[in-house]
Image (cartoon, rainbow, N blue to C red; front, side, top):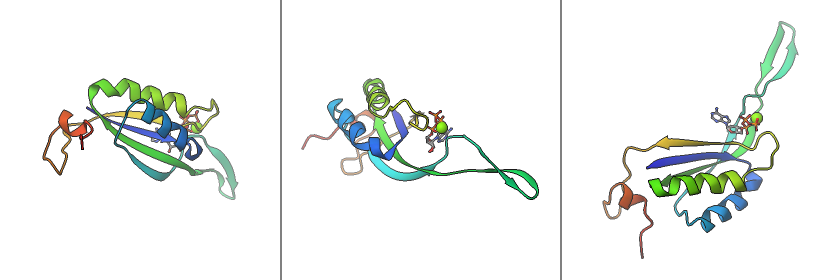
Length: 117
Ligand SMILES: Nc1ncnc2c1ncn2[C@@H]1O[C@H](COP(=O)(O)OP(=O)(O)OP(=O)(O)O)[C@@H](O)[C@H]1O
Ligand SMILES: [Mg+2]
């Protein structure tokens, strides 16, 4: 299991959600965040050169997936979130120790597989 954390442009959110839906990826968390991609804008101050770190509005997606879904999830985001311009964002694939579905007490694979209602 992995937690796929993607930082994307806010105006790409709908495209990414649609792409994930088509890939049958269900279950995700979306947050508005501020981020910085590492680019530096030098600003002169009376003491010499200092660095201004500008923060940009981004959207953070967190998606817990079982192993068969890692590749399709990453691919769906890579394709839908890309403009080709700097600032498109990043995807982090983070190992997950355990997942529990609180309602049923299911664990791991069973807990990330969408529940049938
Ligand atoms: N190393 C990082 N750790 C955590 N978050 C990051 C990191 N790099 C980028 N981000 C997040 O992703 C957002 C977009 O980053 P950005 O797309 O500018 O990355 P980049 O590596 O500079 O790529 P590009 O060259 O395409 O701009 C940042 O505002 C920040 O929220
Ligand atoms: Mg950047």
